[in-house]
Length: 576
Image (cartoon, rainbow, N blue to C red; front, side):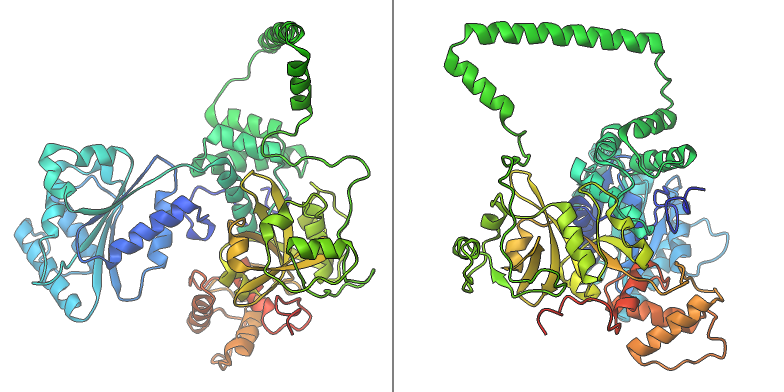
């Protein structure tokens, strides 16, 4: 209902466990690493737990898409089974033949054992995944433990992953299950998001849906964190309801009040009576007045030095905030780029000596970059608006947005779209497009820069009109992997493009893949998304380290567009 209103390609906050929308926070990366570690282990159990709604199922779906091709998986979603039903379900998942109507556990176990020996001889591995494992009975868990006894003389034939809520930990602590608990080789508990992670999560999902960034204001994001307590499923429900409320109110900007209203609808909290609310505000005001009078009395009794320190403290910026320079002191670092020149200037080394020489109007000699010193300079242009202005200039588009303005809307007239992602330098290299990154100092001060070039060891960042080059490891100290880039989709192309579609978009994808991989067109119907094209798209996605689902979504399309497009700005342009 609200998708077209916000320029979205699909609903960004569905509670379905779609791995395309998975935001890999530090905790989710570690959870995924534990699952992948379990696949490589020779037997035993892997245990993944987390509160309701923290993303266990989505991580599992993402994990299944990342499995090597030599792994067979049996996924059991319904844990309320008898031992006999469990064995039948495992055999069904692995396509193991057994006598129909069999009521003998031995027959099923023998059939499974022979199957595991056969696939092991062909160099394949087998994994059993049980979701909602906290609901498994003791008898079923004991049967699962016995399955780990299926082995050769050198290794186990079956790896088992248990995924469940925190009650699973308590279940495995029971005395009668101590043998199973001793076979757990890896454990991980998935925690809710922190506030910065919630913000990045919301931006990530909006970006995947085709509209990153500027719908929720800062206070709205904080309110989402407060109401959801960082639980992804609750974040989805609240944000979905907030988007619907904004659509109904005909506003493109969601504030904290709108999020609170969405929260009341989601959690079923009744509105407070207006009279009672006024009484609460009156009581709060009275308490504040009493506290202020007490503080004033204390200050009057204190000495002048104490009062002066308190006065200075009130003028000091909040902890973690950025101090505002005095009026008239805001300046711009000198640059080697001529006014009106959209092209990049010479790369300047960012040492203290270099900065000093730059201010004096002298050329800076090459030297080791020190990003920490640069970020500590009060004259550095590192605000968000400057970073996006530099990003748009690479596309020869003028950006007139304010500090908190809708940055991603500025390029719509030129056909530009934002794509918000999180990844490594290799991910940025594959996109080969300039991007805005957020750098956060240990004190919590945020700076924004435009990445304009990357080589094997360094990255060039643009602050205002200065281009400074730093080692990648130095930037990694302040960058958590999140970035926003601009890309230009082909005219009249809509995504996603899925198998079975017959449209002009399919013909474009086929032509572009032919330019990329040199493969011939093996169909007379170029507008039909057939199986052959799906395999080629999946191969391209694997080469680009994307989810090889064969679906041409925004990220896949962005990379297809960026390749072999001479008018597109490149991260290598300043090096060539």
